[in-house]
Length: 306
Ligand code: ASP
Image (cartoon, rainbow, N blue to C red):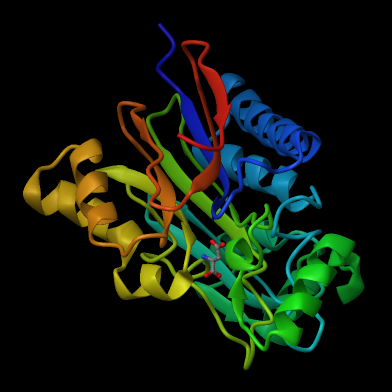
């Protein structure tokens, strides 16, 4: 009998107005379904959880609707700085990058850091240099440009605000992306990628590239990928906190997630998590969270609101 496999993805949490143009909602659902399919295909063919999460995240990085890779938000200089991280629950190896400016797919760079460097977190020009040395595709910084994010940046600048992508207006404008998976070899993994906050200054770094805050995976407990107000997720060590509650208190994934979410202030965001039995949770305390889940039983579902 083939062991169970399962995957969950998110495309950001925040203020998602139910009055949003149905065509745009449809496009997000298509984007989520495509990413979910990429991930489940890897798992179905016996691939690893880490590869499944990376393929799902890469698919959303290449989709301009999401705030990761192409479509990333603008910083205060009208440019893009991207963050990403991966963690393999099998051996607790991880890789992360922050302030990436020219590497097309930051999630592939995070994986390269994990596999090919002696470090965990590389930043700025050093991260892009490492990408070049490892043959990862390079682009000009304006490759990530989209009109939608540009307008959100102009608005944020005019109001002199530094905004999380999901608070930049009352409409959809979010899209940090992430994935967690369980493969047939009983391994867990997590990946997360983002453009961060609209109009961010001083090379601000959120939770996404911080192992234990935005991303964590450990075969002994769970794999987690977060989205929301990065500063809160760093302060609360959210991803590691769920693992810790399961490990030290013996809580189930559902219980641990519930308690961790309760500790976060309203509208902080949400996360996706999976345990070794393939149980998936996707809680959030914002208006909505783009998300999806699929598994070996045939489950395949994407959702935005409750
Ligand atoms: N957590 C990300 C950050 O703070 C943003 C997001 O998830 O929307 O950079």
